Length: 415
Image 1 (cartoon, one colour):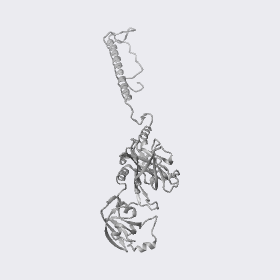
Image 2: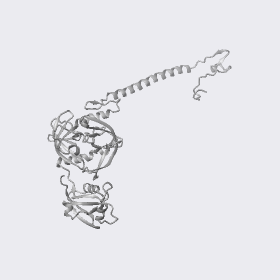
Image 3: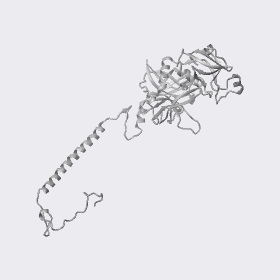
Image 4: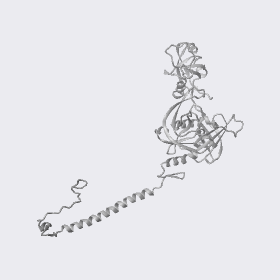
């Protein structure tokens, strides 16, 4: 039996026993008897035909395979801004995306009002922006509000090194978005804004900006979290009074990257770089405002110069704030029932709140029968669930008694 235990495979040939007749083609009388028949002719014919067929099949297969390779080789690679696709480079899509978006990313110089000499800059005076629209001979640039805050003079430097005087179109502190405009002459590239809702965890992204004023800098990483909510102190007083929904990434976002582009591998801007966590021992925590949030805000700033939001007119402090707790004597002065543990204490009432009768030390607990537990929840309800002119039912406690009033909301004045 052979190696593969196959009856049709054997390296041994057994010899026939003597006594076989000549008719059987065996061994007789000491001589080999060769039987003449048509089988010998059929065998070599079959061999010849098999050889010819094998050759034909081999030629056909070779032609098919080489033809396919030739077809694939003939297809031209996609070229974006003279960056050709390279099958041997796993980072080729990063190269293409960067080449596609980079001309639309600019550096922003904020000559602050408190700087006596305009040529003296600190890190906070440097940032980035993204050209997202061109209209009526003007190009419009998205950046962060904190990049242009306190500006006395704004300048934009494009990728080709040209410096343009920039005008502030509008800014919004809550969303940390601002829009600038420059002369559109010579601006021939605007960024394509993508759909940030389609981002996937682990997706590769690149951050383009102007960190530390170095200019033309690119970093790459992945999306660590698609919809991260982080607390924000709008007044920088240590009290969190707003929440920002952001994209978390480990792509390096440094000083000056703020306002720059977070880009997917299709070359679309899916976020505006806004901040990073820089505590000791913390790395790879950068954040960008999702493009879907940015675009609506930017368009409203472009058309109206500001974001119109509902305004109640109360200055408040949280009843139950672990970071800034009320003193025992302050709580006692409110004379609240023991069941009331969360709410907003009114420190001052102006505008609509004053007209509705709200006063010092009133404790707001509900808007339209929905619980209000903090200044953050109060602001989020006003901004997300009401519009200018709405009538809002307020439930509050005054000297231990529950009361209700109705207020008509006005437009929030500019700060």
